[in-house]
Amino acid sequence: MGVIYISFMNALITPDLFFIQAAANANVFTYFAQSNFAGKVIILILALCSVIAWSVMLGKYLDLSRLRAQNLRYERLLSKEGHLLALDPSLPGKGAGPFYNLVREGLEAFARYGGDLADTDTHRVSLRMGHVENALQRGVAEQTVRYETKMVLLGSIVTGAPFLGLLGTVWGVMDAFGGMAGTGSASLQSLAPGVSGALLTTVAGLVVAIPSVFGYNYLLQQTKIAVVELENFASTVADRIELEAQAAANS
Image 1 (spheres, rainbow, N blue to C red):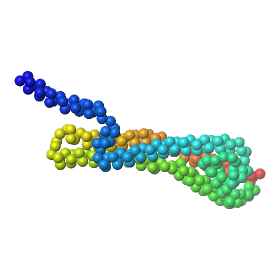
Image 2: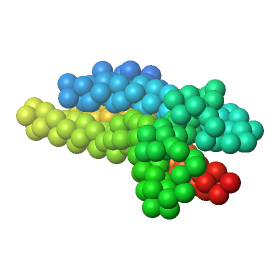
Image 3: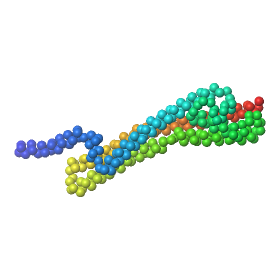
Image 4: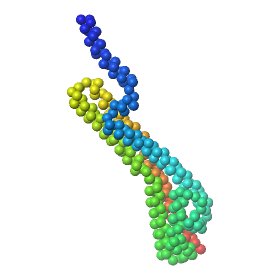
């Protein structure tokens, strides 16, 4: 009886030791090798999405930082100008960036639709300022599109990565159970590799989506702030042009 009991316990312990040793030796590459063809393709797609997401996030952050620095530099330069309408409409000072483009478009509209500062006709002055405000609104819209460039791509990766991972997992589990049913074997040893390989796609999807969603939310907030600053600056430019035009007409 003692020999039979020991043999029975060894039979129970040996599979556990086998699984412990297999788990210790397993890694991401092992799970990738155990994935089916569809799972491997999805993991490669997710890896590409991760590279694209990080490139977009870093590029967008640097782009927003550069545009903000250009705006602050030009705003400081513009604050030193006594008369905005005295600037050349095609080259309103030394600068670059969205603020510079807005001032240029506003001054060009003012000059295009009759830039005579001595004009005292109220109707023509009002009509001219309407053209200036329309030009500034178009400029704000164009610069807003520039600010929001590639945000749709990043948002698509944030939304789609978890679903791609889930698709790979469901497909892999389906293949694992289908293969087990075809062979007639219902052992854990035959099921575990396929399931672990299938679950890897969900992990990959989350690894792509989690940092991307934090980066997307941060960049979206910075973009909204930049657009608000742009609209406020456009309103300030319109007010300054109108006040200078009225002061010149009354003098």
